[in-house]
Length: 300
Ligand SMILES: Nc1ncnc2c1ncn2[C@@H]1O[C@H](COP(=O)(O)OP(=O)(O)OP(=O)(O)O)[C@@H](O)[C@H]1O
Image (cartoon, rainbow, N blue to C red; front, top):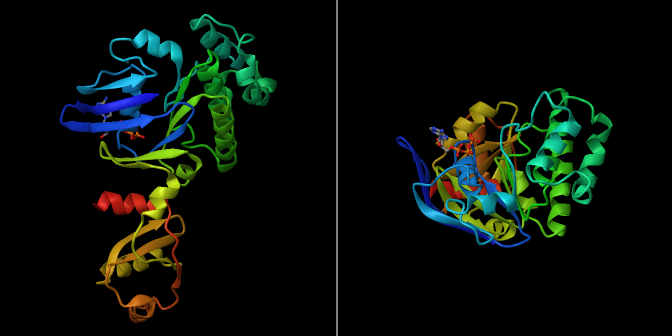
């Protein structure tokens, strides 16, 4: 089990973590979801024993990353946000290198990485620096796994990766979970939250909520609409100026519009938009997702 209690970390005047607490059970696929600068990497670095907290404590399967960092490092795999491999070494050499630091060999733990490694094996002589983004990510995952860790920490593994590779990557994570490995993964992509057993929503160094994605979505209250127009910016401006608007933000190709508790409905809103010269706006029923809960929680 992983437990983090009241962790705080400042960089000068920046409060990167403000008394963060959470628990992750064995074999769980746990997501840390939040935008850039939320504090995800800082929290990871403390858990994997690469950074000292200012206050609070953590325990990784019973070991303290501050005082027992050697035990922690033996038991974890860590894939940092930035590409961590040796660019001038080949695929094969990178993997052998990571195995050798942990006193093991590729052969010894091949079973664990096999599913992933077969996909990059045709390029085993290629320099890591010359691989595509998706392949680099697979190699980095193999390297983080080659010593058979109990817990895997993946810091934004899918950032900048194409949608097909992202999907494949999540399938791999589910297979690792099935092998009993706990996986903690951070992502700025709200749609990936649904792929986790539980998630922590984090913003400005604070945890907003920890729960299953379904429970988080269920707890959303408010009437919502999706709005779409080729002229998105004027639409956003007009919706934000609407007196009955509680929250308005654009997400992907449409705008998520949430009414205040007391409101006069879609008809009146459509009339208001028509008057603003935006009568061609497409309004449809809005089904809240994690991103809406995130916005609602961060607006407090
Ligand atoms: N070494 C550092 N020195 C000063 N400030 C830092 C340092 N590392 C992070 N920060 C700041 O601390 C805050 C949290 O950063 P952190 O990297 O943990 O967030 P993140 O959620 O991982 O976001 P990102 O995806 O942008 O890395 C940010 O405001 C960031 O600018």
